[in-house]
Image 1: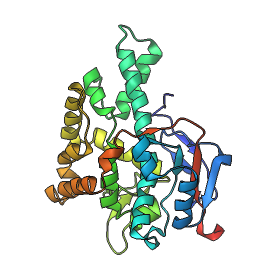
Image 2 (image 1 turned 90 degrees about the vertical axis):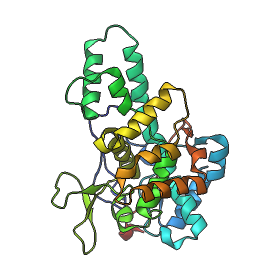
Image 3 (image 1 turned 45 degrees about the vertical axis):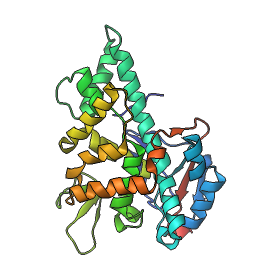
Image 4 (image 1 turned 90 degrees about the horizontal axis):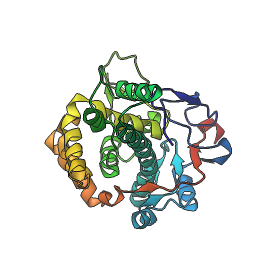
Amino acid sequence: MIVNLIKPLKFGLASCLLVAPLSFAGIEVYGDVDKQVPFYSASELAQQLDQHGLKTETVRHMRAVPPVFVGHIPSDLSTLTVEQKTDTFIRIILTNMVQANERIQADRDKLIALHSDHHLQRHESQWVEELAQHYGFGGTPTKEELLKRVDTIPVSLALAQAIDESAWGTSHFAVEGNALFGEHLPPHSKSKKFIQARGADIKLAAFDTVLETCMEYVHNLNTGAAYADLREMRHQARQNNQHISGHELATALVSYSERGNDYVENLQSIINHRNLGELDNTRLIQEQQSVLHIKADEEA
């Protein structure tokens, strides 16, 4: 299935933690409304994930995840034991990142297929132009230039950054706005939803769902000037038919944080300590999807 990256789709969940209608920036809705499963606490969420077959050890063995998606970060993750908290957080991010990557991979596959033909139809050329604009090109990029940006990010790297930036999903920004990757905005920015730090002039981009923040995170790495080295490393690995390692790509993220090399070393430490590299080739099992979402506090 090819996803239209340009046209926004909207869907409302009146009983979600964020009760305003949800806006998915070019992202299709997870599944049918009648397949949504409400939960009221982090412990109940962990049980729901188990019941729906999303178990970390099974995923590591099978290299596949069931299509069970958590829309929001629970507000009480910190009340779980350390083992429960870390395992639940990894499962929340995992399926959403796999979904984000598979949508990007679909566009990449289509782009490669189109360029294998000698002549593009008008609607095909228009699709390529829109894709190029979406990935930040003002003119007409070459096939190679575009493919460097239309590409996936290792799940291990995304998990490590989400763990570091959101303190395992317990930060104010994560709970209030699904802000998992520390996307800072200028103090006077009005271009995006944001979460304000308490008592400080700091704004982080806020998102309606975990999938939306994962998609924006990947897009940031795929288009930001500061991450050109990451894209080049990934491109060279593909050219040489090598595994694209989150541990190795982390070395290109010195500019992501003011902590510089210390930040990179911490990401690599998280990947190694949690054996996150085992999750890099995880795929989504294609069957009926279920959506888990948090009901608003007043409805609990």
